[in-house]
Length: 475
Image (tube, one colour):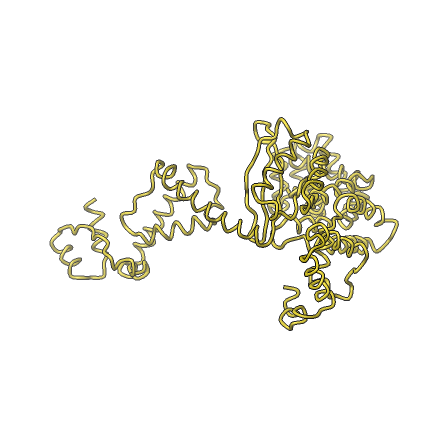
């Protein structure tokens, strides 16, 4: 300890006290922090120390933090967490003498204060629910104990808030009990604040849907858009052309990822780029993997023609020969891969858009789906007999499930589209808007006020004709 303290003091800027310490060999006690220290930045204090010592000091501190990460199996990207970065700054500002919290503190007063902070955050979300309305989102899943759990989340312009999770193992097939869970959540949030409920399209929810639309006069039941689009992809993948192509692609990827040595060799030839592309849904993953295969075609050809692979024992099996055949000699396969990507990728892009939280998708779904269909037709050179079977699969799910009055209202009331020349002002869109107004506003004064505002909006008059309003329509 004496050597360390002397080294620390002797690295100062040459003050009298430091010089005296060097000459006499005495040790100065650590200086306690005074009330003015809070106004002196760490950068100002650091100027009194020589740079090489500070670099080594930081290196040792960083190694200690790294060792904590490694031995506790903490993911490396946790270092990008804003709370981690802020904690490091606060510890640095405290300076010498900071005692790390104990495990007891983490689970007692610190946890209690954190819970209090979360409750305060929830109050801000509740204010947004009352002001703007909100969406209840339900997500069912199975945990490691095979329990069927349902998560309830609430979305508003303030963001998405996890409300609670319930164990529905004994009632997941019972529509009445499912409605009971949902009704409890609606009452907890306040029925007057709920605009819509989003569930997946499983058949066991149909009974709950009927009861909700009947008993909640102003609440909408809306199928999950991401799930509907995934079902579209599933329907398309079952078409003979697509099904055969995906089977051949799986044959290649299964072989490449089925053996460690082959996988390492593949990564060598692809510069560590993966063929498998895990995505939000199974069918999205399948089509993105097709795209990866197409991008890595030349590298895969190089792999299967390499001496290293040909002389290995992994090149002798039936699955190896079949994968090699598809990559090297099956010209029809690569042509079909290109067709499948062109025929499906626009729909995958829509799924990515609605599954993100970059912007509320409700006002964009109509336009996104129309644009995706047109892009598919364009990709296939507008050959009707090729793109129409894909369109029919999309339209069947759209008409039966995804086409909802709220989507039509969102499209009509989106100023990014309403004032464009190609705006689709069809009966279908207008009827969807009026159905929303009838259900949510009734026939009273609120509806009359909304009709007046709708007239101003539709005809670009009043506040909607303001120069600033027109400048910010697309923002």
